Length: 234
Image 1: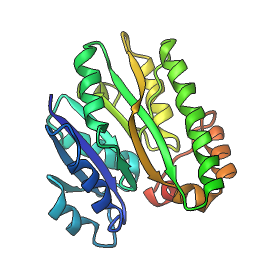
Image 2 (image 1 turned 180 degrees about the vertical axis):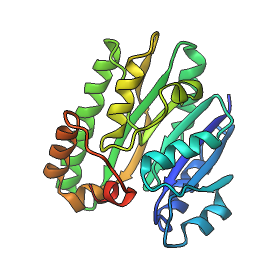
Image 3 (image 1 turned 135 degrees about the horizontal axis):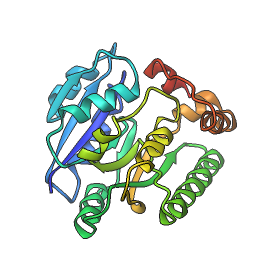
């Protein structure tokens, strides 16, 4: 089963080589890397051309349009999403492939996010939060409430387009999950082995408590995310 890995990128010249290097070290090899440059002002596009399998420019600003554009350019039955400031565990793609091969009814799968931070206490705070989120989503999925995380997920391509991809909203993955849940016979799951390590820069810029509070508010009130830069500052 071939997988398309989609990486939206806005001014990611420093992080892009790291995420692509981690993908090239995957135990599962049948995949392609699609980088979507979202109007970067640095060398992101040129670096992507050297390292990725396919590189496109998305003129419409925003992480949701960039992800959707990458999905349009994919040709495989399974598409996976990961952010440019992440590092994928060597078995990230193997976990995805095994999950879909073992369960033909599986619609989508999400994994575990772990934050990196030089300060042990901040790292502890962040990862206590991510573990709480992971197991909460795991329980919800077990009881038939599909919830996936946009920065670390894989989904059947036909279903992605059936719900028309991500909307241009903050916590876009939450609203994507709500659309997915309206379909019949949807089955999602969370797998701890589908692990990524991601930068805590967004949390640092906005403040951990403030960012988590904002995400919570946005789950009850739709707030447009007009620019990827806005999303990056959250």
